[in-house]
Image 1 (cartoon, rainbow, N blue to C red):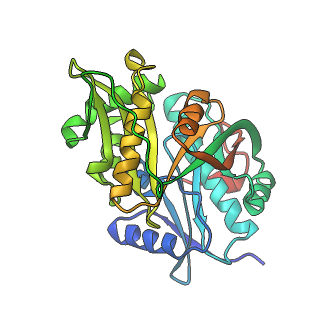
Image 2 (image 1 turned 60 degrees about the vertical axis):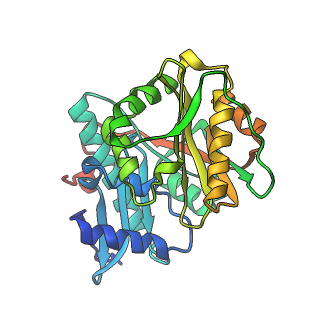
Image 3 (image 1 turned 90 degrees about the vertical axis):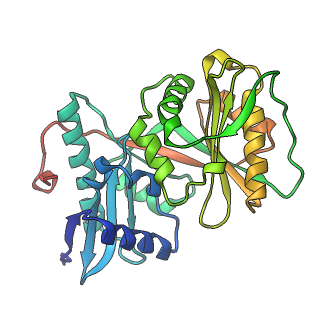
Length: 306
């Protein structure tokens, strides 16, 4: 028997408060990425769909800036019908982006390697596993934190505010060799409710150039994180990564965190080595999946309009 849902696109502050309360009520960790940062972006708000039943929020979904499907469903509300509607919405969003940009991106998704429910869902909905994995590391902050000194003439400071945004974007792009970060996305990080300016760190070279960065923060459960981390190619192999992350760990400890987390791609060996040298231990991994997005709808369920 088909259940009747209603759905609508994100409408503003009331929906935002409902979404945050909804996420806080869930008994299992939802796969929504950096929700508080993503939802600051108008492009994400325009494709965030909410499902309701009897005026109760039961699910929501959006596709992030990197074509990853992000969603959550209420406890006890998962069904083939709602899962199919969520995936159809993701496909629709990626299809429209592809058409607008002349690209051929897949709809991607991830889940923890030990999450059998999510694994079964992704496989059932036609996602194919990719070789890349995301590694999650943990570092207890109860023991003394090793200090890694900076090279002569370098210093670490907090990000001063929005005036730093353009320089931080340039640094991020240079460090990772991509065009992924934008000023709008960097400002979204800085406008998120859990953003702590004193934990957003940057290393400055003797000539005044920004040379490395480490965005730290506190999660709702009190755990800290140091991610992302990057060093400009002109300043690599000087020990800046160790120095700025160890500074971040000390700052997190001062803010009351007892554990810190960070992440690394399975293909990013330098980041894995940095994490291990700083005392992080790999505690979990996420698997990645993709689903091909046809250029035109292939079924009536795919014809959802943005």
